[in-house]
Image 1 (cartoon, rainbow, N blue to C red):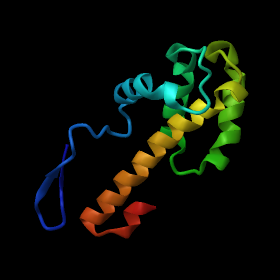
Image 2: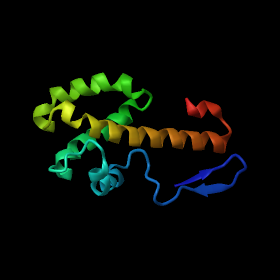
Image 3: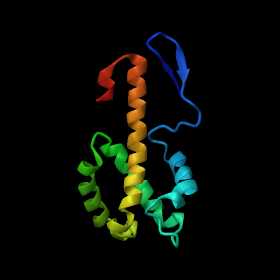
Image 4: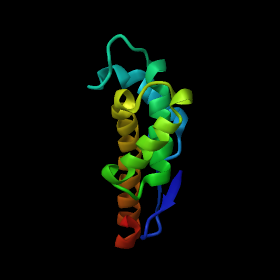
Length: 126
């Protein structure tokens, strides 16, 4: 992806920097790193957490403008309502959901900060 800076030059996004909506890249990252997360039970596999990571990823795209403490009650209710499909309880998967949500929202904030810096527009940070 190439962007235009305010000085008219073009800058490419690093090839390894995923876009906000790139689930395939995030899924690969989670497959490689999930075992290092503090909430992971050593007896569980990636498959046990995959739905929670995907749920957090998708939720972040809908609620990126919110803080976790604002988004969490709605996400918890939706998770519990869909528990038959999603599997484990919210209390077991909340860490994974929040981790994936935070990964996406942090990346989005950083992308907004970079765009604001390139364009010299603080309004892009809102």
